[in-house]
Image (cartoon, rainbow, N blue to C red):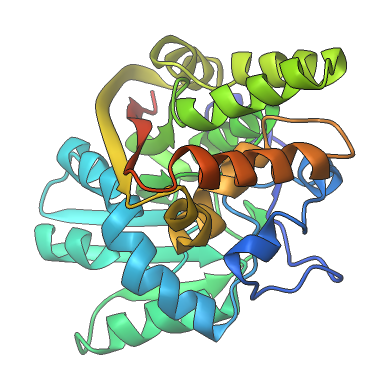
Length: 316
């Protein structure tokens, strides 16, 4: 089947929760709940960490203002809109920054998609507090699902936790769903982010003379997007007028233990780090990084490096 502009209909699976890995975990327990296989086999377009009600509230209260807002604010700065907009928010989680978009656009219709019912409940509650607004949230497991091609003027995706090939599939799906001259906004941590974690993984590989682990790490890091490769991926998906902006920031933690315990790490940073690897057994390496952080930053602040990137692109 072909869509607008002769593009073949893309299909991207949205991940569901995986039995056997509890959704709500103490931060330290997350290091013992790693399964690289589910990321290698899924068609993820955003974090596949399932959120229960407690996690959804934590995500909205702590993760959004402290971390996700870094990506959302850059996306909002690059948002091009007139008096009307029909916006698709893929992987919307608890609905940030949908209310900000609604405030900016006089007549906005927003559709948010996510696999987590608990997260969608929070998003719906926030939208309902505004009264009669055109903001809808749906649980979705794949793109484009029942959505018609060329439906939206804007498509937004913040911090999708994906493999390199899956990011390309996501962009193709966004291209399918956007109308002519529609704008896609994709915000991701670019290569060079979380350098402190990278250094500890390299230290682990050297200490234990694990050449295969080192090879997997370097291959995974090489696949992380850069300003140039993000532009190329969007162009390959059929977009034009691609513009990528980068903000270099640091994310402070009071100590290494504070990083391990922080919900930002558990719900977004560590799932992102997992995609660096295609090995089956990560437990020893993860334990090493956890203990090393606790040791090296036991009494000092950890400033985690982060390259916030956002790409804006137009459909022909």
